[in-house]
Length: 189
Image (cartoon, rainbow, N blue to C red):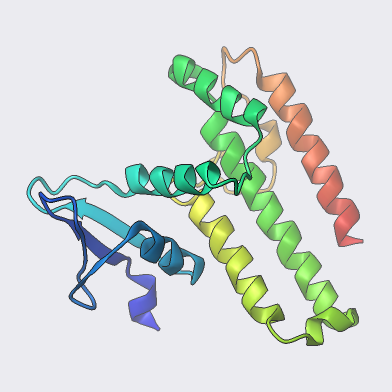
C-alpha cells in the first residue's frame, strides 16, 4: 500500500519512448491514462535532462481525448483558459479550478456515500469501480495545484473570503464559487 503513494516513475528516452520503471517495459499515453484512472500518481521525467514532463504529457492525454470527440471541456472554458495565460501575474484560475474540483470531489464523495446507504444502484456490480474512477479523475485534475488560496494559510473552509489585491475578476469568481457551493449543499441534503 505504501508503494501506491509513491508516484509511478516513467522515463522518457531521447527517442520519445516512455519507459515504466516498475515493470521495465515501454508504455503508451493510453497506458499512462489507465494508471491515473486506477488512482496511481504518475511522474514523467526526461532521462537525459531530468526535467519533469508530467504536466506536458497530462495535457497531451487530455488533448487526445478531446480530439477523439470525448469532449469534457466546453469551448468557452478552453477559451477562458487561454485568456488566463495572458495575465498570469494576477490569475486566480489555478486556485479557482482547484477549489472547484475540491468542492466537486467532496460533494461527489458525500453523494456517493449517501447513495450507498439508500440507493439500490450501490448494490450494482461495478459501482465501486465507478466511484474509484471518478475519484482518480478528480485527483488527476487537481494534482499539481497549490493546496490553498493565497492568503488562506490556515486551511479552513473560508477560501471564498480570501481576496488577493488587484484582481478585477475576483467578484465574478467568488460568485461562481458561491453558486457551486450552493449546488453542492443541495446535493448533500
